[in-house]
Structures are given as C-alpha cells and as structure tokens.
Image (cartoon, rainbow, N blue to C red; front, top):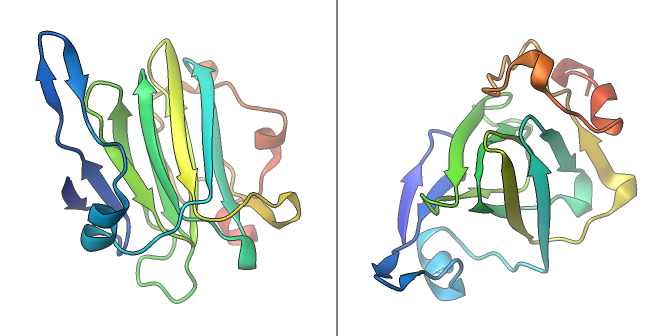
Length: 178
C-alpha cells in the first residue's frame, strides 16, 4: 500500500497494490497490520455502503464529541469527488479541505481522521461507495456544513443546476455558523 500525504495532517490517500491478469484483479482493500504501520492504529467497527446517481452531493457531514468518526472511504464502481474539511480546533489547517477523485478503476482510498467533515459528489452515471468507521453512528451527535459554503468554495465538478441533494442536506449551516 502506497500512502500519499495531502497537506492536511492525518488526511491521506491510500493506493493498494493491485494484482491483475486476464481473469481480472485482486487487491487488499484493508489490512489492519499494514494500515497500523503506515497510517496509525484505528479500530473500525462499522462498514457502510451507498449507491447514488450522477449529480448527487452527499455532505458535508460529521459526528461531534465522543461520537466523532474516522473513516476509510473508497469507490467500488463509478467515480466520485471525495472531500474532507478539517474541523479540528486549533489545527493550523482548520477550514481547509482536500478533494480527491476516487474511482472503481484507480482503487484509491481516502483516510479521514476524526475531526473532519466529509462529503462527495457523484461524477459517473452511478456509484457504489463504501466506508469503514471507527465509531458507531449517533443521530444526536450529527453535524453538517452546507455543501455550497462560499468560504470553502468547493468545486464539486457538477453544474449547480444538476446537483441533487437530500432534503436534509439543503438546510445545513455554513462553517462560520458552527
């Protein structure tokens, strides 16, 4: 596994070793020992999967306090622009974000430490997205930032008129309102 730094402490891109031949391919999507050696010790307790269509923007979501979550995210099929925003108090990169295109073809993964908001936009016709979490979801600890926060100015690579949001994601506050 190759680890690529992003410029935001703790937020890294992972490239697994993919073994391919005329039958297809094989790779380890997670190996606890190697992950601990190269990224750090994280105990994942929940796996999630979502399916979405082109134009969907999910996020920017986070869990607060004792229910904060670190995530390891990847795409099984399709393509997303995956975004993580640093919300760690006192961090020199507070409010900074990193975006990475994750696809079923490039097999890249993003590790998002606790203290980040996370979201993605679907760039392909359809996407199957998976993520591991190191803490269970707690609805009362949920937080979010508006996808279109002008301070963040994230280019989701989707025309504004094509963006599809859940009813909930249409009403999140801006970062400065947190």
